[in-house]
Length: 111
Length: 112
Image (tube, each protein chain N blue to C red):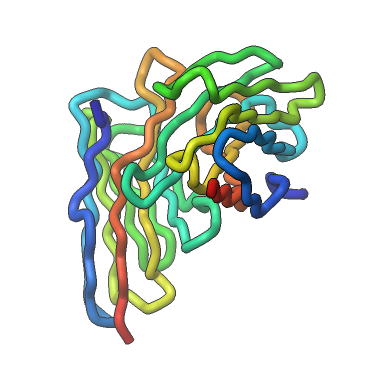
């Protein structure tokens, strides 16, 4: 059973466009992280959100944690080719030590 | 501060052989997790070690095993390799629980 579903699975957009990636679950998470992975490398941590309703900004990236701590979104403004990669959400299910990764969203930004 | 290191980076093995992969965590990190990543299955959790004890285990056969040493370094072993074991094996470490994991570059294993 996949506890963290991401949508869309694939996204191909032109440079300068905006996009939003969603990460949804029926479970509550103590915290949630977003990672970006480039081919042949390990995922790199982008941000951690902890509090329900929390919004964090990292340059052109905006991350939001749902009020009930069951979902999150990543919004990219004016996407650039350097944003290309696999975006993964992940989190520790509340009350367990289980760290779960989402299904992933593969983003390609065309110049 | 040095990052997570994994050795070797690339490995080619024959079906039926066994392999040992190594992971050295960031200084101070006591939790080490291992993942298998393939194009078809995505990132799949193998197991997590904390203070030399396996704390969590994914749904992989017993051919996959691991251990953690007193200095938090970890090894992963796969015995009787199968073609389907070809994958990128990632190690991730964190300070305590499986929170904010930092990944190594991975070991690309090819089984022929």
